Amino acid sequence: MKILGISAFYHDSAAALVVDSEIIAAAQEERFTRIKHDPSFPANAVKFCLEKAKLTAEDLDYVVFYEKPLLKLERLLENYVAFAPSGFNSLVSAISEWSGKKSAIKQAILNNLKGFRGKSLFLEHHESHAASAFFPSPFEKAAVITIDGVGEWATSSIGIGEGNKIKILKEMKYPHSLGLLYSAFTYYTGFKVNSGEYKLMGLAPYGKPVWADVIREKLVKIYDDGSIQLDLSYFNYCQGLTMTGKKFDDLFGGPPRKPESHITAREMDIAASIQVVTEEIMQKMARYAKEITGCDRLCLAGGVALNCSSNGKLQKEKIFKDIWVQPASGDAGGALGSALFVNYQLLEEKRVIDPALRKDFQKGSFLGNSYTTEEIREYLEQKQINFRQFSDRSNLMDYLSGELKQGKVIGLFQGRMEYGPRALGGRSIIGNPMLQDMQTRINLKIKFRESFRPFAPAVLAEDAAEYFDFDAESPYMLMVAPVNQKYLFQLSPEEQETLKNHPDLLKRLNIPRSKLQAITHIDNSARLQTVDKERNPFFYDLLRTFKSKTGCPVLVNTSFNIRGEPIVCSPEDALNCFCHTDMDLLVLENIVITEKNRQIQDSESYKKTFVLD
Image (cartoon, rainbow, N blue to C red):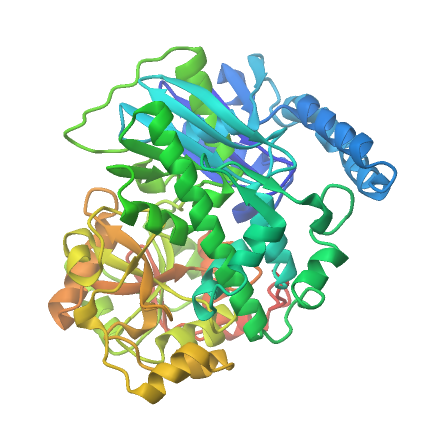
């Protein structure tokens, strides 16, 4: 069976192809169009998936859309009736979208898949999320939790997966939503909804949760099962074009922060407060899920499942023995989930699990495109780019490790592109975590982003427990854990005071906190990626060689892009990014480039204009 899953028309459009129960390919449309969070029909991603499998549209048995458009339209109309007439402008905006591309999804599929003669199916949004969480997981049986803003009506769900079946047991419905609550605070603190939530999470450790009780008392009633009830009088997303209203502003002492303006202690404390409340809700939901399913393993998906801090707290609480989070937990993952749902749930294909192996089916999430050395050479020679090619893998690892030891920052482009928002060593920028200025340098000189943003450590899986208070695996960079005490510095009273309370974020960042300064966040935590040889052999070998030179099995790993752009997709994207930043080296498979190309730097086809996100 050949099944193509599609998500589109909200944000992070994507396509995924499953053939005979195997995930063959999956990619987000933004990587090809270079439009961040591109919501358009994923024509390029579809083309890539079919080419990867050497198929045409005529070969497909099913094309599956990740949600039910008519059910979503029903919710929009009922929402307007409930808030009429105040929601008229919001309704007009929504209907204008639905009267165009969204109401003609089936036709869009036919227009973009010429020759397709199979069946078109539409699933519910949270069914797709649940399927993306459970079916690729290494578990025969598990509780399944999905949490996001809203699908059709559902905003969260609890279910159970067993074998090749998923059953949704409970749902929380719009307008009460943990995802929308978190997005409201994302908007209020000056970040962009549906893309800036991770910035709010990264800002939280700088503040104190002084507003947490206010949030609990005024905004949200939290029940023991993790369900919530929002006081909608504080919010504007039901009837307006913003997330919050005047009553919300009054409660927190002023209007929302303007994007790109100075971040104050108020925003830090608000971020800390909503993060604490989010973690509380997720833990209650997890305990209830365990109670009603009787499972000792948990699968997570939905946009809120990308909240690494909450995931880390869940792992630490040991509510479940094991947790598996879908790497593409947001809407992009719905494409994969919808294809897998049809494969297992509807067509009843057998799902074979070997509990002894504890191996998932996500293939390290390296499901995107790749380029051969010959293709890369041909491109570079055409562009007259000087390069050095290594014929011996060990020599390449030795050279790169030596450069990293000296403080060089490397753009790493190798193997297949990652599916999901995290760079995992396929399309990454890497550096030496032991250097004090590495975080600020990469943020300001290479990524062109806010200086407070933390970097993730990639660590050899076998060494993770030595450096971090963590006893599981985190191959997809979706867990936060504390740095072990032995690697932390003893701070003077003055340094502790600066670290906790100084209003200037750069002053706080400049306080040396650990021997792994570049990956140690302000609260001594880190969003870690455990690297094993089976999933990621190139990156594993590089970490091993770096350890042999330095004694440290950890590298800084951040996504290969600059602010406002998607992660690089092609050698051309990688070369453009390299030439327009302060990166020192570019690695394209076994080819190394050290010289910036002046023609590319001056090219009008690549301008450093950054989208506010």
